[in-house]
Image (cartoon, rainbow, N blue to C red):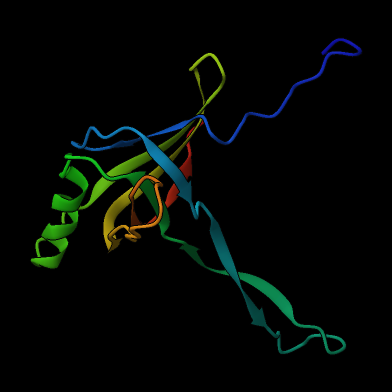
Length: 146
């Protein structure tokens, strides 16, 4: 990188989602992309002093939360309804960050995802905001793909 040249960070508003078999655009928000590894305390029998070693434990992944303006598209609700009926359909989900030119810059792939919670819009006769649906998607892993 030349002296004086800088790399600006990507903006958080320019993203899209890919969900196996569901073609839905216009998400307002996607949050909760995180992964954690629990530390496990371990004490060896011949340790000198009172020091506890830290081992890596289980990996956990938070559910992501999607928000979008309600439309006639029922594809996400139909996916959630299958879970309610006991016919859980796991899908691969990708969250994709784009630059200003619309080019993919980073992708997170969620493995074996399924909708675990749905929230209908809040209605208020004195407001004029877009009616927002919310869904939590639980998954078994997040792979940084790019």
